[in-house]
Amino acid sequence: MSEISLKRQLSGFELTIFGLALMAPVTVFTTYGIAAEVTDGRVPFAYLFAAIALSFTAYSYAQMVKAFPISGSAYTYVQHAFNSKAGFLVGWALLTDYMLLPMVNYLVASIFLTSVFPGIPAFIWILLLVVLNTFINIRGTKMASWVNTLLLTYAFVVILLFIILSIRFVLSQETALFTVTPFLNDGFNIGLLMAGASLLCFSYLGFDSITTLAEEVVDPKRTIPRAIFIIICVGTLAFVGVSYFATLTQPNYQNFSNLDASGIELVAMVGGNLFVSLFLGGMLIGCFASGLAAQSSASRVLYAMGRDGMLHKAFSKLHPTYQTPVFNLLLIAALSMLSVVMTLSMATAFINFGAMIAFLFVNLSVIGHYYVRQKRRSLKETLLYFILPACGALFVFYLIINLNKYSLVLGVIWGAIGVVYLFYLIKIKGMKTIDMSFNEEAKS
Image (cartoon, rainbow, N blue to C red; front, top):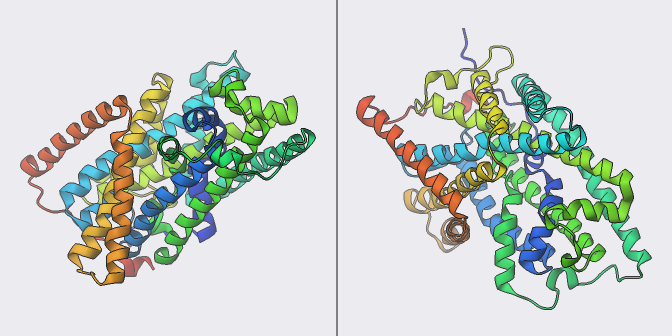
């Protein structure tokens, strides 16, 4: 009997849809009010600033997937660039990002649904969403990609409608349609832009997730790097476009009655109650699609760690028909039910810490693999494999030290648990190295 393995079947388009679904571009509406306050009305410029800064990290992911087109993302890259122990600890931190992101999406979706249908308890909505997402992911990445395409299309229709309605509203107010005011307000301020970028960079989480599907992508060394930068560019266009016209629609963010609900106020201002209904549907769809993609990503990281012997062998098992890690998907589904009792702030604190640790070490992995191990140190190679990833690492380090205290405390506690487990693997189980039993030839 031939060994069951992940199947290469995803195209570049499907991979891009997957990353955009996890990014959930409609979330620009949920962060707009707070971002406007933090940047003093310079939200579009802050999004551009965040995109440029995170492009260095996106570049590092692209370089590492070219070298190692294997499931596991940051976990895999760090263990190859440095060693298995460092790889495990980064993978352990990464789990807080991928495994809890579905929970956040279910929690947000249940809040919306409960407000519309107050007679139905939140846990019913969460259970339905978890079961539906898990079923789709078990059936395979092709089915998940098809569903994500439909959901994402609706979300982008909502974004496009908002821009069109905003243009109509701005013209009716006899306001200039093209101006630098939404970018600069009353002048350039690097401090405010950095503060805004620190807040908004989390909107871009998703471009990294597609690297977890490296063993299910056709020609991953070319397809994934291209998809990463398409995701960054499309996300930036959506974020900057919405925030630009939002600023034109309501130039003074202090006029919002509730900064947390500024998105709803903007939508109602330009499109009335009908558009508000369409918008709420788009928000729900964005949560569902992001949860679907996040669950798939988390299951692939667990699969890679199980295949390497870092976790129990059950994590490395695939369904004989669908070729998906069913045990992992069911485990994440069970954990997602914790959203019934977990607060949104606690879950997002975990996610922020895990994502930033992964970003930091992927940048360092480029330096470790190409510049140190392979000694690629010509003038051009020094730029590509040292200076660019170093810029990415410095920006991410800045984000880490500016995380809120809950993110840092929860992250340190989770990291300590990982160190104890790693000690168990080494000292009690006697693990010396991990089994890198990936055969790219067989996968092609």
